Image (tube, rainbow, N blue to C red):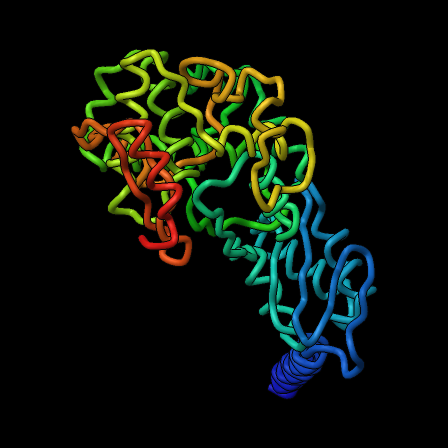
Length: 350
């Protein structure tokens, strides 16, 4: 009987010690789970500014590597608890760029990486942007390098995939507001914008589905010119109608927007404050003052109004237009060259 009592007491003592050890471990784990008392620092690709942390987990990066970088930046007390937790449940950390508040517990930081709640930035590409301008915007927002975006927009595989007969995706990258991860692959950006272009085009209820790639390409070229010419949305169909009339009569389009494209995008000069007569003589297939018909490719990304105008141009007899009210952006439309000249002389009255 005494022997049994000793066995029971020994077992209870062992269990008590087990509980004590577990309690100590839980207390230690809770202590180690809390963020360090000191201020976090930039280290190992971890950026800390104003209480906001930005950290990228690379493809194939190990949990141990992530823990070591968090510890070096002062975001967790020890990498060893991090390693233990990662090995205990086996859930993977997802690659990407993450943003979170400084001072989160270790388990909360790990939860961000497991859930894949990546840091998104809102990037707005204005209507009328070119590939180069779009690339510069993405680079300024830390999404991708400008040169990578330009290269992706010229990728022959993507051009074939989207049946674009031109040399670049110019005109087929829809100007819009995008929410993307920082350090986003340039090829995926181009695909996202191209998919958006075709989606928005379809939403207009146009007949683009029945067009050949070459016919659609011509529409996109003209839409890009209309985009850079109109200022009041109600005038976009009128301007599209003028250009259609000139094309049907074999007249040159004589669009200043195409000359600006040559100056800024091809020659790399600053955007001109005004177009001079000498600029109209610049030699380029994009200069519609010298070349008949459409230029060889789009000059910008057209938005909804310009695309809709080209697919449904105003049926008019106008052959000319010129700015009548610079403040409002209103144009004066003429059927004859003489009327066009008179409008120029009286422009201050309109």
